[in-house]
Length: 280
Image (cartoon, rainbow, N blue to C red; front, side, top):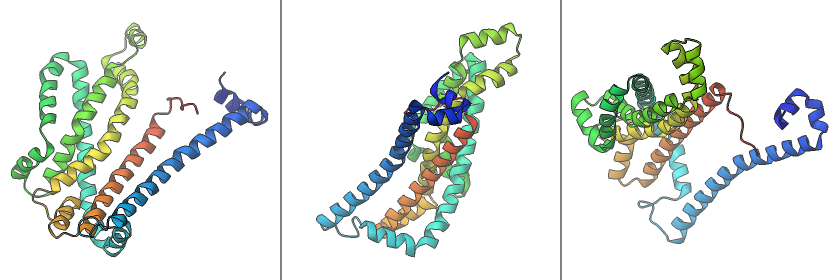
């Protein structure tokens, strides 16, 4: 029985065991380190930003100071919030659509190698087209509504999830697969009871990537013929040389992607419970 199992079986004994106390102490130090270092890194980056702007006397219309950006975010919060909402809707819609399509296609690929060999290169070719080249085509086809932005976000999420999902569905333990064959399991039983569970860590790795790329896709889509959203606000601030508003819009898009990432991470912790925690 390993250390965590022993302590779970007998908590009181674990608390009296010097080895257990050392384990808990090391675990707490590791948790504090993981929480503290990102905060210190963020404050260090803000300090460097302030030092460069102040030390080189950079003009505000070129690069604003952190104080000016903070004031702008407070004073223009209603404007920022009104533009974050459509971007969030587009990003979430593209995230759901792109990943759902990728999971379905990965399932087809795993069960039919001929289809995989025929269409996987096409998926690769579509993925190589820059998103700024796809955006005008989709706007011409779908108009200036949310539809092309959601589609762009879906396309940019699609390929990483497809690749990871195919890999996860195929990376099944041969002994487990042989056992399912011996038990005369059907293809659906093999898929839902073996392949799907095995692919979840791969899937969530792709979903974490898609949290940021979906926001990127929505913002890029808003650059082409849109009057609302973070992307449109970035364009407006750039043309009016309002660098403080430009930086505020960029920071808001970063916060949106970060919140999305944390949500997927929490869902992963609730769903993928069989992965052992990393040792301190």
